[in-house]
Image (cartoon, rainbow, N blue to C red; front, top):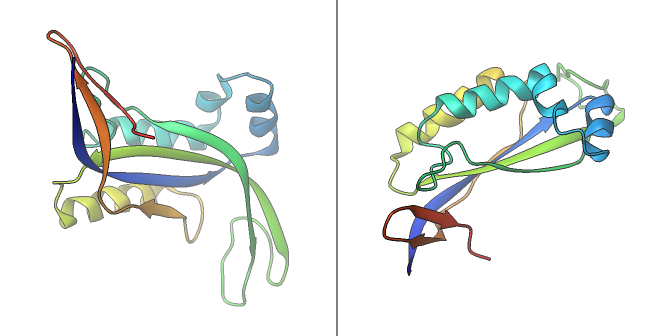
Length: 149
């Protein structure tokens, strides 16, 4: 099996979730991902963008983690959660996926805009990395990629 490095960029999206969804996920109830309408819309968007999450014979690949996002709302904001001057802590689901580094800047901008358009926050946290490499192990009949550590 040959190992090659492929240049990619990382897309990470921070998405708020209800406490109930966080509780279900923490207890291993993974169906909560698709039962939550917000997360379901994000998963649908990721599936509809063919440039995201392509790993050989696997498509729409993403990684996720649950955590918390904290912020204080400033004057002039129109928050979905919280109020001016108040520290707010929100359960958050973080989705990470990858796209080919050769994708041009206009396409990357359209990709990010598609996520911004469905995101519930006034100012969503969406990270786009610079180039990094993932390992690609290629067998005779089925290519597969793994994230390099």
